[in-house]
Amino acid sequence: MVNYMHVSPKLFKRIINLYPPYLGAGVKVEYISKDWKELHVSMALRWYNRNAVGTHFGGSLYSMIDPHLMLLLMQLLGKEYWVWDKSANIEFVKASKKKVKSVIKISDENLEDIRRNTEKGDKHFAKFFIEIKDGGNDVVARVEKVIYVRKKAALNKEGT
Image (cartoon, rainbow, N blue to C red):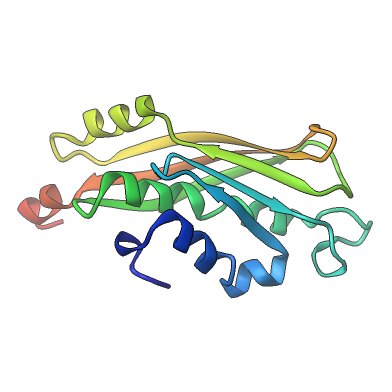
């Protein structure tokens, strides 16, 4: 993948839409804001991403939102932070055959909270909640993502 620090949101969107796992799942990033704080992603139901009963496969539903919080935070926080996916929990609410979509947002408050909790070198586990909705605006799944964040300088001083 391209070094994330040197691309515009527009170019990044083009690149990630060519990422083989996304092509294989039918996932499409439709929009990334210029300030890297909002991303829209969608997935149409296709023969290759449906489950045994003909609705969206759960793994594809999760994969459509999986890397984005980490990637957006990497852009927003910069090179002086370690940013990793820590954990996720997905609740499947409703089966759907309609196109699904999700809007992923990082607020100024989220960023302030992360910076405040990492300013002394502590690791921080930032929690985010994302909904995946279908074309009728019904919630198909709810995802809780936990992102590990820590300043790199703090790690280097401690040697850990």
